[in-house]
Length: 318
Image 1 (cartoon, rainbow, N blue to C red):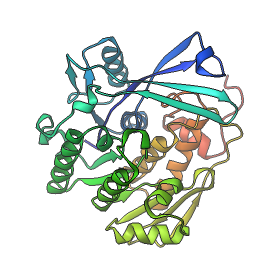
Image 2 (cartoon, rainbow, N blue to C red):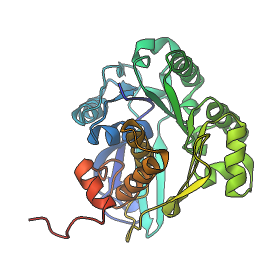
Image 3 (cartoon, rainbow, N blue to C red):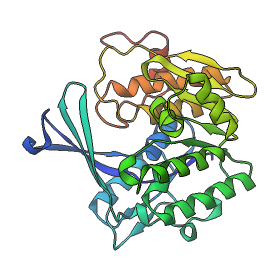
């Protein structure tokens, strides 16, 4: 297995018109979750990915399971819960550049994941274990599960990739979030913070200072996401380098861009590309996703990705 990822995916309802959610009368149903977004992104590029989670024994769970499995992702370690529901969230496109997200995930099936529930062989055959800071915020049992996952990965030589994916709404308080995000960063081989997350963890600093602080935690490779500016890369073998981003004329939906970026970086590394080229692929993936409504709808296959990175396709393909 190339990449294993663990976390909650929820049913996503998006209004079919812009404006405040209270005025919406019709919605489109999709699916969204950082970890499954990464797994789907990798699968579309031809890599073997496995998504581990827990779903409610309900219609939403059935639909999600079928969708993610249909994307070629291994879902053999996804279990079902007869007493807890599949989580739900809503996007609200209030106006241009003003989008809000509302989560309904308390006591969801995924929040009941635990160490006892996670078999070691779900991770032991993977080259990379991808984790985010969302999962440990769901419950204490989810944190215990991640500890087991990390121990299993280290025991089997699986590299750990950690994206903080800060969601303050799921934590008891900011200090708790800060403590655990630093903890998981310190146990990772590759760390994927954004600027806002770096500032949350260490306060106001220069980009160079942030990178040094992350290395001081024990992180081997730091890849800081800089939005449309690209990313800053630093590792033992690569001195601090900025990898430029790709120009997007119109951002339709920014959610999921960071997950696409992670999938692109991992894809490049799996293909044996140098770190800087892998990050450039990640920048392209992130840019492409923002041009389409939905978390995974804009994730490309290899042909579309190559075309975009080489200047784009024709306006009309005949």
